[in-house]
Length: 129
Image 1 (cartoon, rainbow, N blue to C red):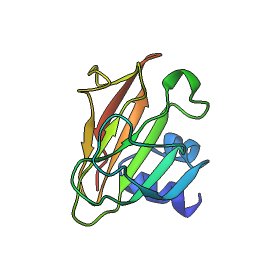
Image 2: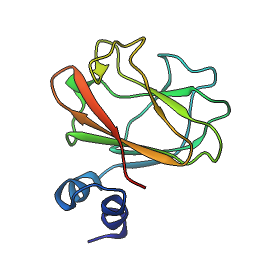
Image 3: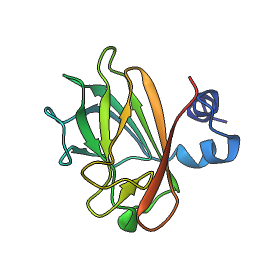
């Protein structure tokens, strides 16, 4: 196992999914100032947000219909003080919400997992710290 897989397992992700997720890691992401559905587009399987200038600055998941990688996406917020909002792609949803009202928050220094449950819906939960 590589260190990344071990880190993911330490965050509460089972061994098999953690191994699959280690393929595309994007670091140094800055959440879009002011938040909203047009947030910074996420492109990795594991997305590490390092800058959230104010609470609710946002990022946006890829469209499920075009996502080519695993069933899961990880969003880790490494900002020390501000939560980051995660919006679905246009036409998709998170936990059955809408694209405009269905964002979820990733608290400062925490991680959320997004799992594809249908062709248009992500399920999301907080990863264990």
